[in-house]
Image (cartoon, rainbow, N blue to C red; front, side):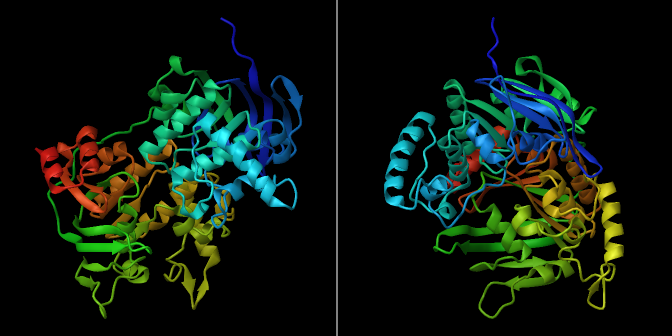
Length: 520
């Protein structure tokens, strides 16, 4: 049987940043009309290779062919002209403009936009019908869901004539339903002849939708094959260079200890007055991990904000240790500084918006929120030398790559950024840890490491609240599971009574009767 021609061929690609060899003689061959996965640990060189292909970086050596012809890609404009489109993990959209205006940016075709908008609408209507990418063109991007923004980014690439799509961690922030919708779109595009390069850490998704896979490790290709010829375990071992132990490790936590945090009847609404949390009550005990399961957008984020002091509820009471905070007028609610003094640490869901300052070097991000500690400052001035040394030690302990405290926070891959945030919060030996989506955008080796760190912290007596959209992660880590839907807790189960089916049913339950029927 004849193989389809190659849409992309890269030979001997070398790319170096200072002393770090991000790509070390990489070869890549991608068949036309296929979905080709590019996988590897954080820092393996995947995104660098795709940035070379898209013209963001220039390789020191190597050749690129598109559709069998040698090309020189000096910038993104060259890439677009050759039919390439790239959708980044962090969307390149302007929230204050409409979806239509975002699509037209850079290809307005003159100063008079009325005619151009009409032509764009007509062309986009046909494109949306053909691709299945339905987007509300007149909506402000800031009002769109994450899934809609993802579709808009892909539509933008197709609108510019992309035949070869590069998708960088496209499902990192999508709900399971949105992921399935995206896969339906990708399968449709593949059937229409598009070629898709998929950078991802989620090996189940690789096995679900891809045709071929290339594995990178330490800047080199270490494995490539057809999906039909491999397995999740084989890919995981190729990525990390050893067998990886995921899933549940050992027994659940021992006998319950003292309550470290207790919330009663927490409620809140968004800026439009829509209820986001509805009378949520929970407790966290020392030496246990309590998992919150649920489809993203059902109140988990608001719960983390209230418990960490980033937001104030409309009703409810919170107790941390011996201190109580109320929502009534005149009562003091928790604030982040007080939370830290009480031994409460927080790993936010959005590391870019809430956990790091991208313009700061890593050593400054490594002490955010703790810069006032004697180890980090003296008489109001940061102890830069001491912080840099501590950051270097932390990077070695948490396997942050590259281990360079002076490197800008934005220069690290998402998984290594997450390690920096986790190291900062865990390093304070907290009494309570709130952690949101701890392994979002993180490779399989780092997932194993992060899970081990959370278990060790639990075993040392910390009370941990874990919010994750990954049921596998909840089942691997939690000792007790709460399920949220539409701002309510719809069920509570010990881990021995949990499985994906039961949790999935609870995630859809909207009433006490439905919850009772599911639990019976």
